[in-house]
Length: 219
Image (tube, rainbow, N blue to C red; front, side):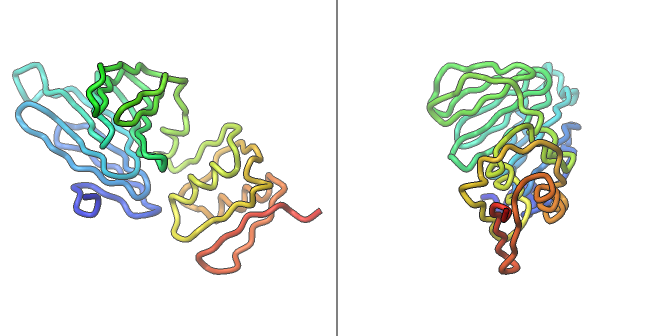
């Protein structure tokens, strides 16, 4: 489905598109969605990756405007005049972060809808929605080509950088929990790794073109 989607990006690519109603969508690395607009509804189906959405009012119809919804395998999100981020994670769930307005979430299993307001985020599967927490600014910063790290483990930073390049980056367990602060470029992964090596007690090796290893720096 992702390969034949209306809009998609390759690994390491980011893309901004404007839909027919004026809605802006930013696609992260290796992302794909379909656009399904009809007389009653504006709908996107996210198949892989991550999208940041800035909706606009629907002025093309005399019915008060068509609802704008985003579907994933785990449920439906209905925008209530908003800017929000939707991400499919490696653990088999959907992450929703709301920056403006609100988003109504309905799980695929049919549980009652829940509204997530601006400045909050949540994660859900088809049957369970986690309690909302404060919104992570990093879930918006990627659209500007920035990985924003606010005291998060090195292993998580590397997992995010890995989404933007081919090949494998291995992190030794004894450095995976080192806390990382700062902003790192998503369009220059080698540069981001060099910045991490400067800031942390780590050493980066590249034994093969497609294999990078991060280990503790020798004393």
